[in-house]
Image (cartoon, rainbow, N blue to C red; front, side, top):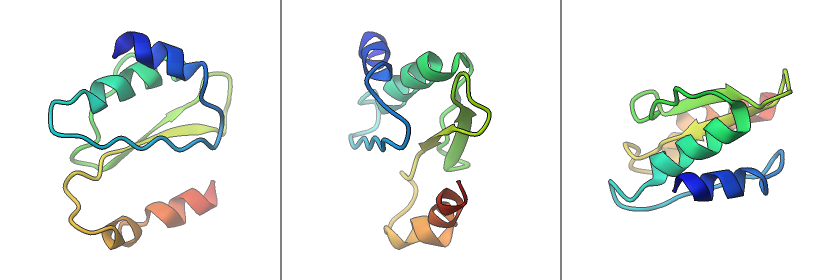
Length: 92
């Protein structure tokens, strides 16, 4: 996953959206950490399971962020809108 994260971090571009789906322990967070490490230089990347959304500034940019979201605890897609994610994205 670490090697895959490094490879993918060179492919992804600004405004790309990456969605991962899988069982607990499948490696989604590990892959996300690798991507974020490679794209931001930030080593400490906690899982956003409890706060749902964590943002990280992209290397070399003051206003471009990587949004790491974990909607595992949400039951319905409408809840994403209810917590204001779409509204926040529109502001960016």
